[in-house]
Image (tube, rainbow, N blue to C red; front, side):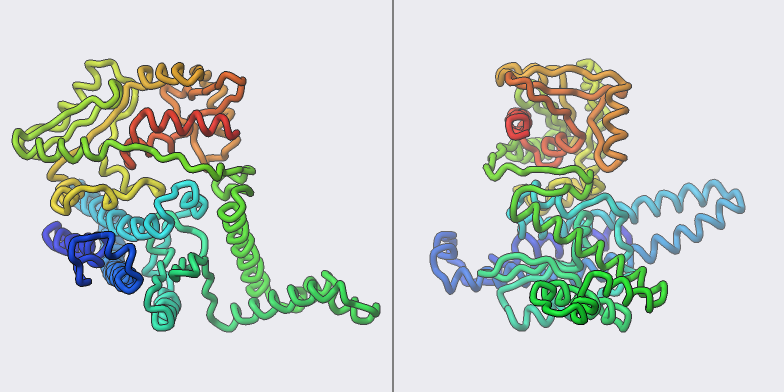
Length: 465
């Protein structure tokens, strides 16, 4: 999609998810009026959810076009490479990468809705992700989800139904339904003759198991015992058996996720390890106001820089006015070992904080997304780690061998943060230890949490482990 058209579509989508609700109610400017008056609150909720619905429908249309265009480009690229046409191959490869970026920018629109539905709670949101490939919605059937959403909203005008396949990280359930007063629910939508048979057999088997306690005769027990399910499956074809097993696994994943969310402990889908989530909330402070001021300052002189808490470097550069590569030279001159993060990389991180939720103006968001302004960040990790001493914590760099062994235990689902192959182990005053994983820096570089807040979180994780 050409950049001019993409920008126009983005402006509309950003308005739908950020401003539609407040723009479509009689609003005096007093937010307390909306919070305290039930009728105003309900009207506002309906309009916010209407904006979400409009955004979701637009994203479906745009995603389908972009994914189909990328498929055509990939077919062309194959031909150009066979013909050894390097010039065209290079041009088409660039277009394919641009289309992939546009896809991720659109998926983050839906991610931002999900984050709002789950009250920005990353510990809950990450339970929905287990490292699968993104769903190609051009090959999936969205009709049942759209029908369900329409019927649900007709019955519950205050509600909203989020379609999971549109996000970059929700891999549990076909839909997430939110009804005010009832909360959130995960839904699996099954259609077709085979799925109907699978559902009926599962229901029948569950009812059979529930009835076993009331059995009084061996004749009845023979019908209702667990072997009944196996005997029924033996009478079905391979396609039915495969579908049945897929659905069972799917339901188990859903139940595991709900157990963790509701009880605070269970199995983590991403790593397969037992986890326990602290019920105490820790509010993390951020530096989005600093970045916002840097964006404004950048308009005046082409660039703006800041050092946050004496360790985190931030630079904003106006494309065409000041080269962002200057930031790389700045970090190198300070002998900083950490990689440099361009904020746009967050669009490719499934669990990154969505850019749209930061308190930046719509024009600043578009400048960042479309590359008119570049935001780069990095951290002097040694200076940051030294601050753990204030919390009676020590750290050590692990050996390459240690780090590789621990990474192998995660089987690629989770990765320990490392520099030159060496990870970091933290230890508190009681001797409890924990390693730093890559995702923790996403809190600094995408959620823009202060380094001191991220340190407090890691200390708390140590205490809760």
